[in-house]
Image (cartoon, rainbow, N blue to C red; front, side, top):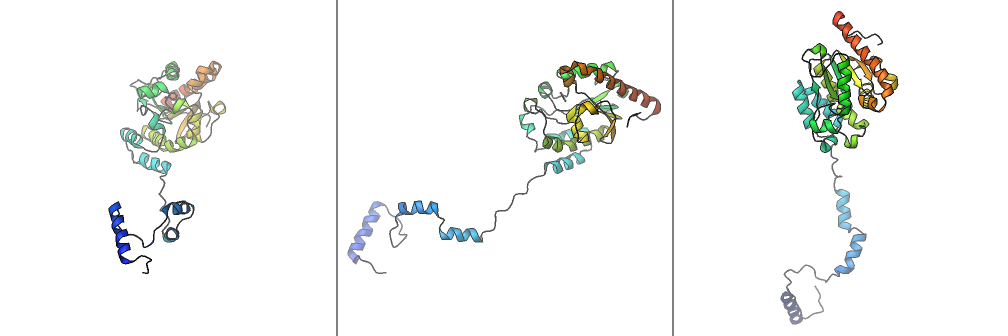
Length: 275
Ligand code: URA
């Protein structure tokens, strides 16, 4: 390589660089890196461009399908304990992170009547049991009026209670469609394991989950099929606490439930007149 420096001068310059701390000779020519740095951020250097062109596109991460995973986990659960464990380990529902407890169920698993509510509130979240707050106390009184009780040993007087969602939504907001769809396979499995004679769909969200439609004012009191079981939509007790005029219809629905249960005692199968 031609150099404008004679040998002694070049040697002296090298010694001087070594004196200053240089440990490596990288280029023949000096590079003004200050001038380069602004250009480099504006324009990719050709080598980087070329590398990008030949590099394979980054592999797409397979996104989990929460509904499919819930379905698989629920189907594998052959007992109530296994179902509870499957729900506790289900990782895709964000509500779980804000909840204190998984609220699975209460009552007698042999009961003829299975009540499906919406989601735990504050008190349910604290105690880990469904319907133990104000709405739950009203529900207990309503059931008592027709001879049913969640603590009864006799299946013909007992009820089994659960919710569409096992975790409390923040500020008791309504569950959204995604949350309902994701947790529905667990509810379906829950009903299949309990095998009640009748299901009570307590409120709009419960109807939405089971029937794919809401509108409790029209649905209430009319027998429908839900989870392969005769089901009676009813006003939610929380709604009754706010609208006491609706208690009249709620009472009519309770009597309808009672007469269906009485008829099934004599006939052996649920007597469902309006289906
Ligand atoms: N409302 C519900 O729907 N479920 C509960 O457990 C409590 C209140």
